[in-house]
Length: 226
Image (cartoon, rainbow, N blue to C red):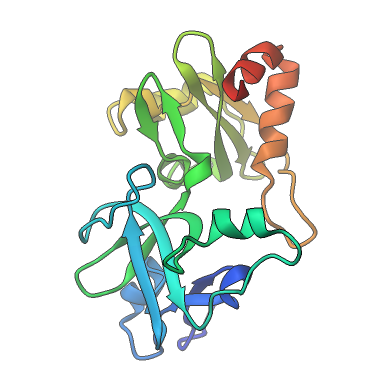
């Protein structure tokens, strides 16, 4: 893009809104491969989403932040506030990340997007990043849908580059031997676009709802939330 001083910030509205950011003087590779380091006067930790215990460096978990930047709470909704901010003042972002030895972080996706297939945790961002290396694929998003035997299974919405054609079998064959077998999409849907908000954020829940409806999986989906 010919913008040699570009940096990458990461955050959310509840954190006013930036938590980490790369620096102008950082090497280019560090600026484009991480979401930077914590801003001044900002605490960041990575915790196990289940045990809530702090994890060591290089282990993936939920990113939490604490400090002046964290909101007071959701207006008129103390229950939602208590769910987002724990008694020690840590804001639970719901995002998965890894902290490296140099204090920089790598974003790994949304915790709520994690697919649990037959007891194996699958992080859609990892599968998406791999599928983006396919020469015919322009964009791709991965979701989990209910499965009677495995609990959930992997499905990919794939947008091909202009003029390209493909099949689900070709996409699956591209994955074999390169990623774990249980991460390979069982289903592939080719699309012209993806459901988005007005600010261009992907709405994976709409993709999942469509798949559940069209595949007749409503009962399995109800069992998931029961």
